[in-house]
Length: 310
Image (cartoon, rainbow, N blue to C red; front, side, top):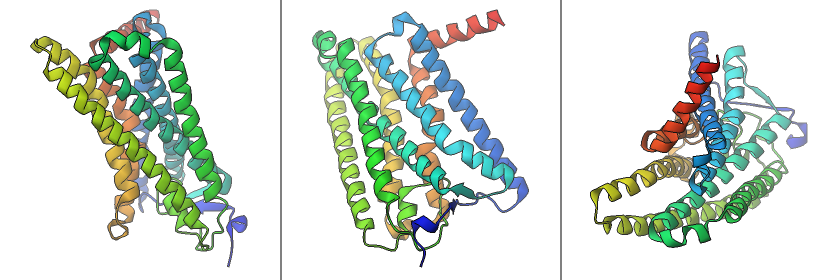
């Protein structure tokens, strides 16, 4: 019986058996990662350079783009490397780092999405108090709290998971290192401690979900009381992108972690992991840009100036 100290590396889930499909997956992940890097990079640059975008909503959007860049850079490069070089290996240290970083960025993203919902609630339901409730210092504290909560959660989960003795091999049925897959390799009842931490995290995530739902109920009630159709359309246009991003992120993450064991299969687990960790970073910039004319104008102006210089 071996334990975690004797494991020098893990084996990730192979994406394909044939060389042609491996190269196809490499090209697919390359396209997704480039789209995510370009989209989020443009949002960060546009918000940082556009003085008219220095508002709480865009400040939190900039932080969200940073977490999306972190997510895509944590999972996709290793998957691309394994597909290109026909390997499954990831070192023990690399696996621990991957678990920590993905939990850090996903936890921070959930906190930011909850804060962005509060921003929309105050903007629409309490517009006269917007400057007071969401001043620059308050926004900075809220963003710092979001990053700190993601960091603390990642430290606790990573330390708990990688202190477990592992004796059921080193093969992970996933594209990247994920806690549920590592717990399957444990041979000790100590894994109940990590399950308890996961249950606590799920409760916190559920609390964020309830807060978001309650806030949007209040937001939609306030929007429907706006007398002009133009005012309603403008209010909806600022809320719908955030609601779409939240729905995509939470639905896939909850399904990945809370699905029944009888539903588990390598193909389903792989699809869900791609949906909640790879697709949102690529789609979020597009979702936010489609309905926000100010952001579109800033991004277009940034690209125009770049092309003129080159």
